[in-house]
Image (cartoon, rainbow, N blue to C red; front, side, top):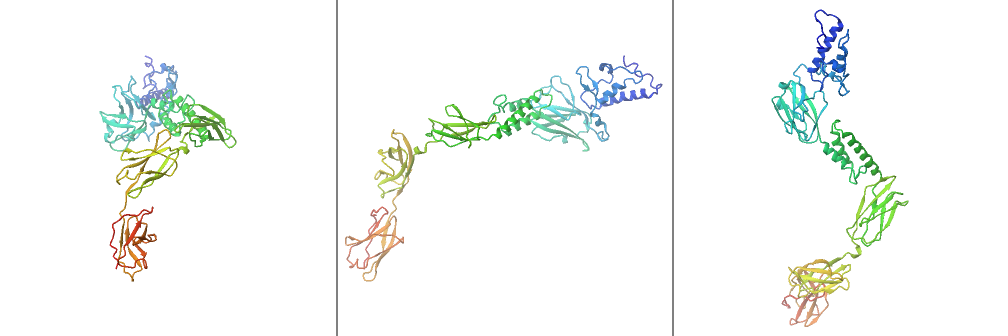
Length: 519
């Protein structure tokens, strides 16, 4: 046994070197028990780390390397040991009250074993985590102070990332529910101490997908890639632990995307002037000297260098309303975002139709105006299409007397092109004729100079007829009152007198005959 002669009779050896060797050995054991790091060198296995006993100082060099983190692992070649976690032994950290320590992440899958978490700044757990039993939760346990934990005070500081489930048999069980970083707090029953552990939930697949989505090709970012998309990818990559081998490469690609976006933003998007379907030229405005590339609706790409004013003009043909034209500009090797425009209909061919209101019993024609290449027009009454007539010029009129008979009739004017294709269908406002009434007051011969009274309806002019002779028509100026000068026109109480009312179109309106009331 290589340890058999390490320590002769303790009571007989009082040399300082021997005493120090023993103290360091036991101190290493204490630190091992404190669970300060994930794994320790074997305190009793100095020879496995290629150390040999010194005749005077014993194994002191091994213990010093143990405490300072300088023991070389023969399997990996990496340094191991306690340093730099020695600060955990300071009086401030080693509180006198119940201390929760010796935390481990247990029941890990694939034979991972328990992982000491006290010394870890952050614990990284994948969103798709499954424990050794296949469950979607992870378990934290504590070697020291577990019985002092108040289960009701255990909490996740972001339940969108981690949901605390329960604390049973001194095992704290939690479940990842979303991506992000948060902390789990374990507070003692006396409230004097809280053990906090930061936990990061990550997803390598989502991070990779977000980074790949930035690129059209390996090195060319998509036209849709913006700062928000890059920031999202960066957030997902930041969550990955350094043990994920793809993290460094993903970060390089994000950096490349950011540089490409910065360069692209330095080159503004060109402006395409509005274009209609009959135009034969297309104007694009960009930067002076930039190479402007235009993609036409049929997929043809043409390019031209912008002039001193930043303008490039292209010949186009066979455009149709609704076609899409796109353009980019490239300068100093940097290509802008894509601009696009939709071809509009030729305004010279836009058909517009107007209709005037039609009053039953008053109007004979439906009238209105139109623009564009209208060849024929017709009216539709209550779903029945009537005869088409030639559209010779605007304004138009269509004889509708006797065809439109009720104010509730649904009437439309329909226009057609020379091929008989229907163009526009415009509704006509149908009205009933307002009842017109003239009511004169008594006229006293030799006393009154005017015939006076009241009127209603569509009367805009009126006149006086005496014994068959009609006198001058005058305008209605003070409705509903009217007056007409009749002195020396009406001479006898036996004269036949009539008041005539006319519409704005000059039509004589029919209304009940009133008593002359002459005296």
